[in-house]
Length: 261
Image 1 (cartoon, one colour):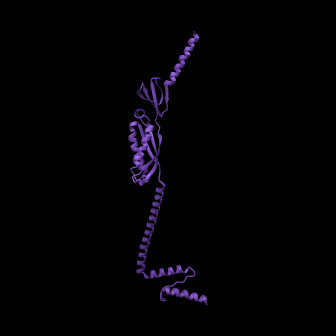
Image 2 (cartoon, rainbow, N blue to C red):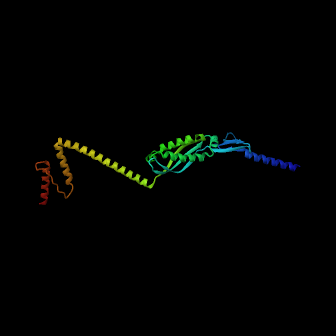
Image 3 (cartoon, one colour):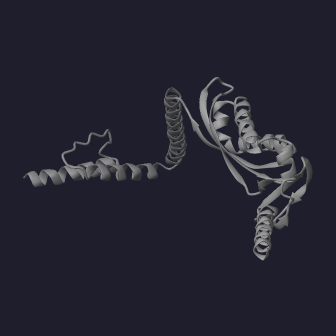
């Protein structure tokens, strides 16, 4: 009799331990449990330790941390009829666990599919140049649209980032030619601006030389001195012997004649 009673006590203890193992739930700080009792919503539990009624309660665990969704590559036709492949990343988190469980079947899958269609719709309304140069504006626009659409699901889209834009090979060559033409245009503008500034300064110098002939003579002498530094050169000038240049040339010719003697 005692052995039977002891066996019964052990059996009851085991049953109680098994029930407690199913009844005791522990959730981490970033987790919440959406509790249903006989199909009815009871509340949101956690974090920490709490009890449920085994067989009557069912709990759906929700992670509150930020989730990174990699949007698959989407083929987008821009407003100017250019076909590109776009990769994007969506950062989302659950702020209302009850809505995330009861308002949508799978909030991660639903947000991912919505992100794909939104990327195609929004980027298809802009031209290629804006798509390449205004990524920050497009990221904010995508984030705002997705955040408003997922708000009823208890999901917050904190950021959207366009990760990569793959262009066709023909378009890459066209962009390279356009960039080269732009650099050539800038180079010519810079050269023309330099020529204009040089011509302006030369005109001012000519006016000053016209007002002061002596300065013009000195400039001529300086120019001839610089030319004379080069060897094996013959200088032909219309200057007369009475002028300062003529005297210099006469003196130079006399020195060469003396060396020849």
